[in-house]
Image 1: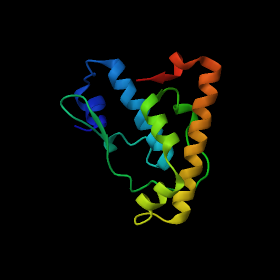
Image 2: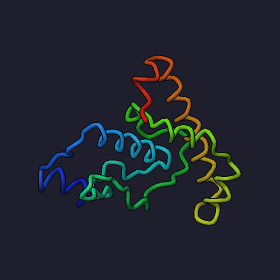
Image 3: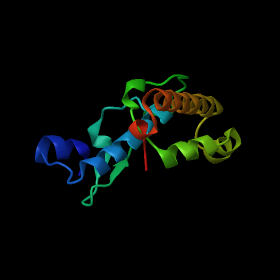
Image 4: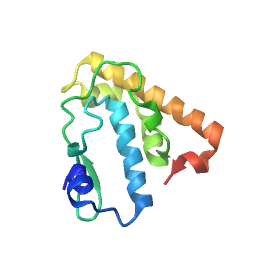
Length: 135
């Protein structure tokens, strides 16, 4: 089902809200990273019977903006996702995305990656790791 259907049609709730919220934090980070202008479209999130969330349809993403669209939505972060983002190099990004998106889109994504990491670091400094990071 789509997230819209879950909320509006079936009105059902995930059995494990902690696990659900961790997935949503990561989805929000991804939406910021790719600058998806269809950010609030609940039809672009699929929910499986075992409550896994999948983002679909990024046709309105990879804009050339060098800022975050909804910085306030980035509250908590997966340790492993942040580690992967820190380990990413611009060369890897160019190699892996170059065939599909433009150099300008890649450059903008790289800038947003840096902004997300800076934001995460600021939040950790201000609130502490336990309040900001999760496994």
